Image (cartoon, rainbow, N blue to C red; front, side):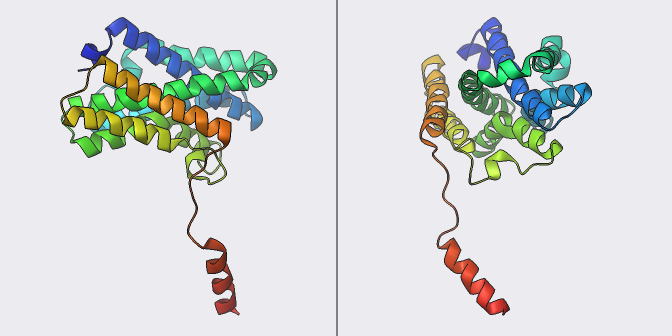
Length: 223
């Protein structure tokens, strides 16, 4: 099904761009955490490939694509080297990195969902693995860096929600036999634009209803 949406060469090129940008974000966090060169490389690899590895293992696509295509493995190392030597300059173009990161998020949530469905999963499970493909590397990055994963923090702009929207659009198109290059592209664009809007307007998911009152009641009960 993926080959019907994108030619293999286009798919490969898009994957490498997404992997590169995700690797940049992992390497930048490693620099902020004062990791050495090995730590920078590890965090770049994990961020770039973690989501896809998790998906491939779950659906039985063994060995995972990250280990059968040398380009997938080398690209994060190139990004790590770039950040190692030029991280002050990379930090200054963070806005551009965020734009490409949003594009990678949109692409991977769509291709991850489609690949999971190709391997026989149901629509809901396919959408869940599409989400995991898009955000899994970032979760692993934050865990290794000893931080609360960004997509679990209320003070971070929406990240998982745009991926959920893109994956949901894909499974709905599959359900109604409407998945093609146009509709899959629209799903990518929807996730991409939603993420950019979240960054621009600082959209965040709501916290628990009446959270302050609940805390006050808990405190009074303890006394």
